[in-house]
Length: 118
Image (cartoon, rainbow, N blue to C red):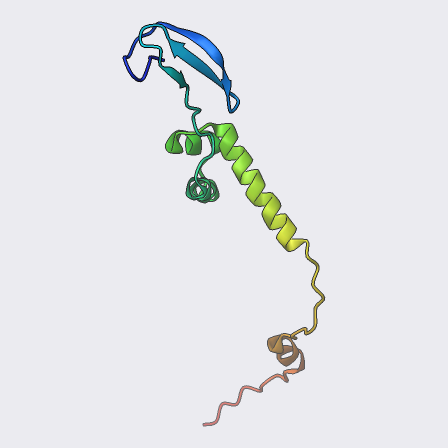
């Protein structure tokens, strides 16, 4: 981590700002802080991980393919599973039941006699 102004490596700690460590360059006196890496992955990547998992790829190979940890892939798949479980847990009453017509037809069907005329 070098000074963004003069690229010097000489620095001292200079307090905190917004929860991040602040530094002061000894060469030019510039105050700067280190940017945090974003840990939030886009939703499209999470959906792609779920799709790859459902196609048969394992957690490790999916993680290698997407460049993320296999534990992250596991957590994403579990969270999608919980969402589906919550969706299915909404118990809806059944209002109409359809009876299979073939079952009732084959049960009452009379045998046909083989008639050879001639």
